[in-house]
Length: 237
Image (cartoon, rainbow, N blue to C red; front, side, top):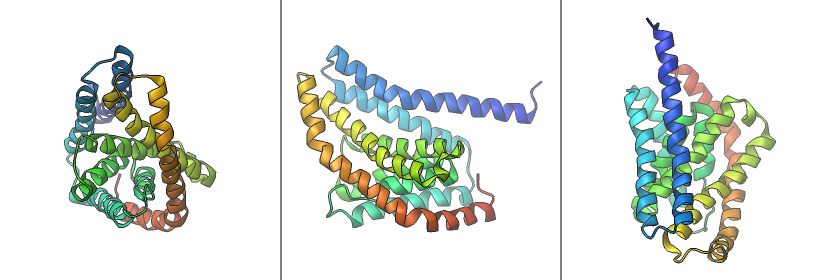
């Protein structure tokens, strides 16, 4: 018979596998849609993105987190959404990715994903909901999730790694959103059309990366101290 510790480890392993499948499944479906030239690629890939989001939301709900565990997630998501709205006048100069990275690095990969997903959902009540919303939720969720994985390996303790990932995370976000646009709406699909779409978005993706590095440089150290204090005080996992 399994002990409680063994059951906990088994549960963690199953959750990790489900998360990995959900994360990998989205780009895999995008690639298959492009390869087979599926006409309804936008709808099919959006459904897969929603399923991936559902896996994370259901997993978070299944843990039955107490209010003290939920509050940091909600507050950081609200701050990220507010920051996106505050800097709306400057294209792609937003603190969202930086806050997702901080959430993931301090509170773990699942919180990082939830903060990114909720920030996109909430801020789009201001910017407008649409078929892009699940993709923004997924992309910013991945930014926070990967930050949590890197932090668990001790890599984000080094500023060079932190800032490099901050810049690369913005490019990752751009690849997801641009990939969805190209595969879902550029018909017939062609590599020339894909390169043109990615090239047109390159300036904005680089701006996003620079903004993320700037916000990390300004916010990470002071926020980390306060958030770590809260994490220790309330025994948050």
